[in-house]
Amino acid sequence: MRAAIIDGYVDEPSCLGVPPYISPYPRYIHGMLKELGYNPLYITIDSLRKNYKLQKNLRGFDLAIIIAGIAVPGKYIGGNPMSKKELFSANFARRNILVGPITLELSRKEKEMLADCNIEVVDFPFEKKLVSLFDESVEFSIDRFAVAGADVVRQHPDFPNVICEIETYRGCYWGRCSFCIERIHSLWIRDPRWILREIKALYDSGVRYFRLGRQTDFFTYLADFSREIPVPDPERLKGFHRAIWRLCPGIRTLHLDNVNPKTIAEYPEESREIVKTVVLYQTPGNVAAMGLESADERVIRKNSLCASPEDVMEAVELVNRYGRYPGYNGLPYFLPGLNFVIGLRGETKETFDANYEFLEELVEKGLLLRRINIRQVKIFPGTPMEKEGGKRLRKHRKYFFAFKHRVRENIDRPMFRKILPKGRKITDLRVEVEGEKVSYARQLATYPVLVGLIGRYPGGSFVDARVVDYGQRSVTAIEAGLDVNAATVEQLEYVLGKLSREVYIHRPITSERELEEIAGREALLYFTVGAWKN
Image (cartoon, rainbow, N blue to C red):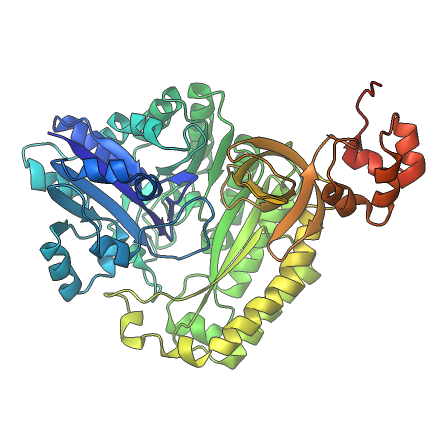
């Protein structure tokens, strides 16, 4: 029996799965199929698109399980997620099963159409239902499947340069926000012993990059859930981190995802200790994604949002207090990120003003944000927003674009100048897009900074670079320690401006003193002078 797992990629409020990330789902499914006696092939949708021979061979397989679903759309450079259109035109194995958040978007008619295309739909969340399709006698255990399926990462085309998303818990203790799909999950807290086994199995398979994600609030992992707002347990979280490093001392990235600002506002002392633990035991460049959604009190009330603007400001201040200082890779250790959602119930023109005023106040206080995510609400069946629909999105379209542009120009760009000042060295940038004059690279991290790297660099290579300029949500950089005699005209111009011509016509430059005399002392920060041989 030949089986394949086709990863069409997922992106959810609490789960990243577009390369360089790999979501937990392929690992769970791989472990399950191994227990059922299969030896499944793992294929990303990008690999499948490029390989006609593989497409043809796949038609002879007995089984294909397809994972797909972009619940919170973004812009991707690491991979191109599978679309509905692509799914309907697919011709995979003899038996095909579709899983993932994409099933939340399918109408009854679309499911019937997929059935006609020989694709069975297993509704999300799918894991337990999927097992029952094959053998109801098999004991269902995500924990066990996660450990057994860890070695599937070796089949990823980017391996070992993948970030494994680790599920700590599922569901949301609040579960009332009008737009969010997390309400579909029953609250399930994973045993830390199983998570440690999973991380160790991945580590033994060669993984060195991890994100403790797939939960709505990392600060409430291992917390006391007997209250409406769970009480964090900083000592248990500290012990959990220590155990990770004891088992896996060579980890290169350990980051987290979501943090609910309400937890920090409600329990500032416990949260302060957790922030300290994150700064000490996780790696620099870390981001706590916080859901503000809206700073308009009317919108907050009508959509049952969890945190108030005051809660969020308090949370941002606490994370800044300990996390804003730069680490060994050039990025601050730990900074907040804010999420805005546009198109919610009760939104008016004044909502956009309130949102912008909140950001202005944050800037006036000298606080740093690593990212500001502004997205239009996506309407899912079964959520309160289903009845509302997208009428406000259409009505407020011009306000949305105006607000977004204003934030990108007036908040994001100046913020980047503070977080990554000119000349700052950023290490371990992995090139994802090779260009003729500009290549694009990012660190293997949670919400990494996009770096436009001046020059042509092969995809998959690693480069250290120094910041020279800024985009709206990105920085421009040149390779650190670049030999001035080997630098391209574009690289010289980006750093030296008009002086680049003087440097160019005087090459070969034979000493740092000569370089300083021609271009000034600042040039020595960006360029080296290699040993010159006649």
